[in-house]
View (cartoon, rainbow, N blue to C red):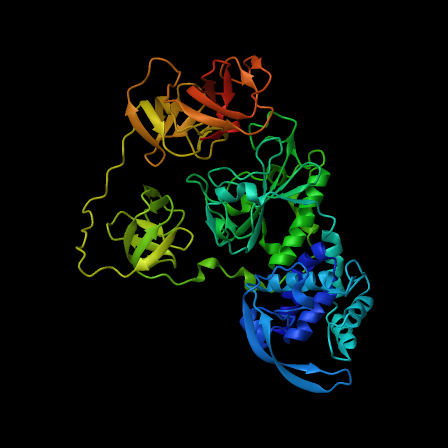
Length: 585
């Protein structure tokens, strides 16, 4: 790492610390440069300790983020008041990462006492770097008689006051941490944090929670500009995947390397379709999003070229106001949004290297999720089947960097770390599996009852994946199909539209029912927010039976599809509610 790269990395971390400690990011960065030799000292390399923080400081009576036990012992130079150097052996604090070192250093400066007085009183909130450096020296922080001059010289050399400005900008952000509520729903950890992806909630409303199935974003922004942090940056959420029916557009952005932001929208239309031209964002929501993105760009070292719409990753119409770009009411265009990010530091292009640069090899791979088998080694190839058992499979050939050929001859799977784990070479005693001599025949689908097997199956206006979406099925129920078109598209008897009845999504279970009502086994749902109306029958046009359904858990005995929603009949007899507005248990 060069000196400049070190300055940029530490400067942006110091900005994050400044928001809570009040200590100028310029001073913190200069101290780190001086005391760690731009990250080259023994302590910096072996203990993530940039500031020479010893295990015992001011009797350790101040609040600390150090774990209290990890230490690193070494010899160190000290100076007397007249400048004479002497050597001592001391125990130093060892940190899990650099940010913890920075935060613990600020905890010390803000909390260390000298009798009944704070040793560095006036440092937090000080806006002049020269004054701040002198406060630190006067408090007895360093024995070097030229310490203040060295700190100020570094600040001026690297123009470190630019980080102070960014820290003050970010201090106005109203971020509420709700990560504890969503932590149980995080499906995976280890996010590589290379892209920032902007979404919209998809419904006219406000929400800040990750779904129980792991779908959601790291941040949610309300109409008034309030920002909710729903997940740690290390969380891998289901937010930009293809879900089996979207097309991958971006070559590298995936769930495993994206930080997601959900903007809460408003809509003057029905809110049923993403293509509705009356979706819009408030000014407060957009300004807060720009501020948050700029902050994340600095903190994570992400350039403006790595700030994307969901639409840029897969072909999903999200966020609607920035796809339509019609500037309805207070909405900006996507280009206007991106232009407001221009003042933020853009790091070297090194961040643009694909995560798939890793070299994969033949052998045994454990599949960690539902994974499509494709006819060839590309994401655009036909899906021929799906692996759902989380089992181990033998890969005999690697193609296009991360595509593995199944020994069974069934096809190709993506063996990258996002989906699979390499578990070793193929056992020599295993018997070879012969390849099929003939291509499997195209399955023939027929009218009848089909059970939906996936969590969300889009209903479309016609028998094509390119047709507009009119709703979705989310209850894994059984539905009557009265017509087959284009091989595997089935027309719903309810008249709601067409669904893909391919075996990856549905299972044929028998002949048609005489009635359009679909009877399922009883299941439970959770209503987690107020305002969900209970209607006398299934459909948006049905009269409202009771004002709204109280928050709680309810039993559903029957489902119907109408007006683009799946409606569930409450066992209590109170009426019907839209399943999409609830959480299925």
